[in-house]
Length: 468
Image (cartoon, rainbow, N blue to C red):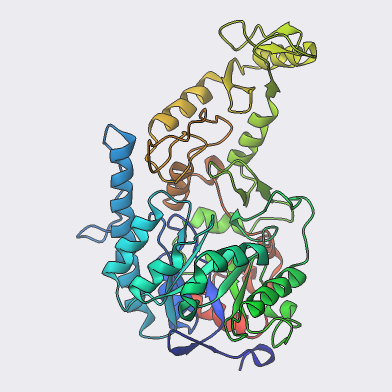
């Protein structure tokens, strides 16, 4: 029995529960979690974002980059990504025992996204049912899916974004549109599709936004049987009672990104799992420090608070005396063409006395003040860039043409590949980025997790199906 008559959907030619495991970035979702989710009758999602490979003894192969140039390191990163994702898909498919379905998830803005996607699908024919893809406008997703005869599931945050993708390319491959993932920009973890027209501090009710998405789909002639997958903030199905079977919305499915982190099969380290149990409301921050330029949601670890503090030690400057910029900055910088307000010069002098003696220029004609060790780390991380994004604000890398964004590297950001690899493989959570959805505080409140109970994926799926 399932909650309120929640019915299976037909996906990839078989019946599955309309419960999707969210595919979480660098090694936070792998074959163990996604294979188990599929075995429980849902849709498991292997993250194809720099997934782990294994050596002959079954140990994880460290992703190391000894090449001299960024382009060579980027090529190595693409090889790691393809090899890792293929291995994860094969293992997940084996674990699923022919139940449920296996999707893969990629970020459109990851470096070499199309090459990775093609490389993985070429080697996993018959094992992958669909590809979910967001973090950008993945307009080529449908043609790649058509080449490899898999479903495609775009991740969007508004009906407007879906309409643009449909008009541009998806309408040519309507039969492979497996579902549309509505990822709520105020509730979901990881990178979020918050547009410039939306206020990060003013969350909007998802129901009208999903209704507007369904209206767009209906105008374009897309069947109500093509599910909209609600992603972000989903915990208890009973809280979505008025969505299930609602004719205004058509077929609805639900994606769980945060809850599967705390399962026996979840590959994240124990310290990360333990930290999830301690979160309280407000511990997850919607911020804009990511080198992708997108908003994203993560736990306010000391690492994230350090980025917040770094940006607060920031003042604008002019190259000549102009307006209120009437005095020259005399600390932290070399050269005289830094004109600031008298008030900002006093703030800068105070920061220098506190040990933040180095001023680094940003692309926005400001300088941020950091400690010498921090400056050395920023510069080293920028030098070590392995091209994990199609466009990186932190290192000014671009994965095509002349391989540079043409903008000054931004010291207010960070190397996302370095920190996500580190936290996923046991690095200290206080020194790293820790993605989570905004409902993560509910681990502490939900009696299911009391007495340090950690469910298997099967136990979690069974629990979800009861409405809890």
